[in-house]
Amino acid sequence: MQFTLTETQRDLKEFAAELAAEAFADRAFTWAGDLPFENRDRLADEGLLGLALPERYGGGGGTVVDVILAQEAVGRVCPDTAHVLSRSSMGPPRVIDKLGSEALKQRYLPPVCAGETTMSVAISEPGAGSDAGAMTTRASVDGDTVTLDGEKRWVGKAEEASAFLVWARFDDDDVGAVVVDTDAPGFSLGEARVNMAGHPQHDLHLDGCELPREQVLAHGDESFRALLTEFNVERCHNAMMCVACGLRAFDEAMAYATDREQFSQQISEFQGIEWKLADVATRLEAARLLIYRAADSAVRAEPSRLETSMAKVLANEAGQKAVDEALQICGARGYQQGHPVEYLYRWVRGWKIAGGTVEVQRNGIARELKKHGLG
Ligand SMILES: Cc1cc2nc3c(=O)[nH]c(=O)nc-3n(C[C@H](O)[C@H](O)[C@H](O)COP(=O)(O)OP(=O)(O)OC[C@H]3O[C@@H](n4cnc5c(N)ncnc54)[C@H](O)[C@@H]3O)c2cc1C
Image (cartoon, rainbow, N blue to C red; front, side):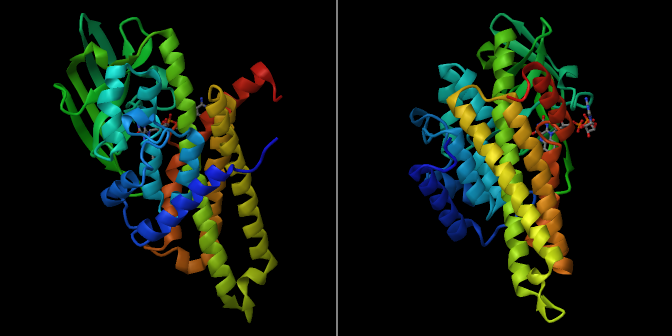
């Protein structure tokens, strides 16, 4: 059993932390709905975009573990930039790498690795949230073309994306995925609702959106299973965003508690504060270890539903609790707009809903336990 990072992994984490402190710290917690484009360029220059994608497409040739380590280090300084980093290796680019044709890989992966474009995923619909199987967006294949009709909802980072991985129901009733460029005929961005972190989430309209059949990435029983398996990895990225936010909140709380004096002593000397810090750190450490294990399993074999769901639940809840406790420790200071903890408080909340809610993860965990036990 090995609980330590390799020297290369430690070096990567250290490199990412130093880069973040030097280049991303100043503007951290100011991005709200804006994409940190300049940081994306820097990530590309430093080889941190597409870290887990093959080198022949401009990626780093690394693993999911490398991505989450770099994401953790950067996210502890600037969560928005960490999000850019991990999205370039997870989600649609990873699905294209694992399931796509050579033509799709050559077309979509190099611009993502170079920081020229991004891709988003479109699964949710007005009538299909947790129950993704209720989706009604149709994909009809006819000869060499596939035509999409339907509406997607809550799509993140849609304005900056040049293409979407759209999940749809095909004529045989199986669910699959199609890569849709934003300039495809019949595609349009719909209404944007701004979430509590200040990020817009868009509707997508697909009205007779006709595409070459080669854009179909996954269709058929086997492909759908593979698509779901890749979605397991996505949970590690979601989970690590929460741990990174929690770690930063912990840092803020510790700094304030060891500086602030009340009743003629540092507030960190009060047992009530000590126990908060101890509990926050313990939960974050447990969540971080579960993510490392889930990501490591994903590198060695198929990413496991049980491990990734457990990691997501714990990390979503540990991250949220960490930020909440940090805000309490920072008192009125932490509650002010512009304070990192106030920003994190709003940001961390969404991850517990995105990528499958914690309730739905628990359903999945229970299903796996009933099938295979706990080991
Ligand atoms: C920040 C953020 C970013 C997102 N980005 C994207 C994106 O890029 N692309 C995309 O397609 N979607 C995105 N989503 C949407 C996200 O996938 C859905 O919000 C999520 O799947 C839940 O669906 P819902 O919001 O419709 O909630 P609902 O499904 O309506 O659920 C409401 C509540 O009921 C609970 N519930 C539902 N079913 C069960 C059950 N069987 N057992 C127990 N409890 C249950 C849920 O856990 C939840 O608490 C994003 C959401 C957020 C918050």
